[in-house]
Length: 372
Image (cartoon, rainbow, N blue to C red; front, side):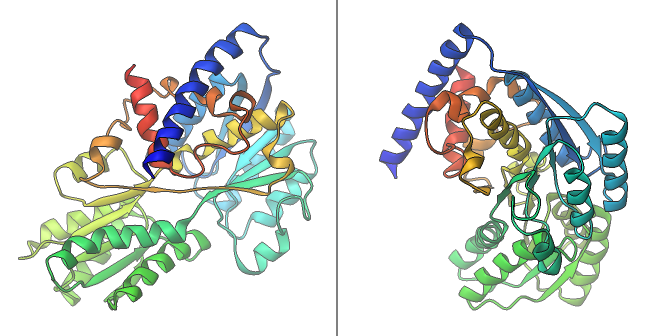
């Protein structure tokens, strides 16, 4: 592993230096336009961070980036997309997340325009997934999908929360706070279930809190009254984890409860530092930027997407052990310090994107580059 890390450090440092000199001394590649469909509301804590990173990548890559909002609703998102395509200049590309129940309509809409699109995350399952098929199968303008392994991430979060108790030979009594009925939340909780099963740990109860901090507070309060022995609260999002922590604090339990979620929200970092929340799984706030990096290559004829349908990247656990390496990812971080051009295949001349695997090592490298 140390040899791989050393190689990656050398490669990234070299590619950064090469890209900066090469791309500034030659002509700028052709600019193009991208519409990013934010599925949430404006200033949503997680998606605001996604936007900021994407905007930094777009500026470096000479991409004209526009953003519209889906307001957390598949009907609203489809209407906003229709409105944009009808009344605004047609972008070269669209980057969006399919809402369950809305994937077919969105795909059909995009197929009516001279635009190619990339989807983020894998949110569609069952018959709806069969109906839309795979990228290029039924919709030739669907270039590909970029997503992270939610199952593995759910497993790793459950492991990170349980290990401190198991090391002290304490029993583990976990509850699961899911987001909603859907492939993303299900994959995360399925991973958690797999971990607990591997350790012969019985899940006390699993509930849905609709990605809501308020619902997480309410449901955690009820679960504590029903099961006062619980000592692990696994949440499918940081917002729900923050809500659970509030409920645990108010309950004044006589034992420690391990709490964790997903997203690496800015507000959760100090809570991990002081031990109120124990872990968060994240890194997917970079996914829109990864889409832009891949579109840069696609538009400039060095296309990952010619031979691939998907780009899968790993997520990383943030806890007190990893805080020293990852705490630089704060809300005040200047994302222009990340050299997104160096991550393109156009610049690196590599066959694979360095952020797909070993994401934490890439982050550590970027930290060093940012300092210097």
